[in-house]
Image (cartoon, rainbow, N blue to C red; front, side, top):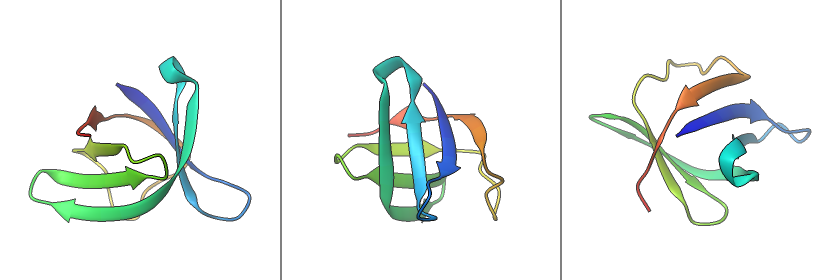
Length: 67
């Protein structure tokens, strides 16, 4: 699914999923062999393959929902 990554007014990383009209803050970030996994405030886990460090924001990227 396509998601947009950006920083909110407080400087926290947020994820916006347009198809679900969902915007949540990232509460946990884990590096794995396949890429990054972000845990959102609502409990969703999203996997990202091709994110660079540091993350260029805002940007729209492809994500896969794990949980």
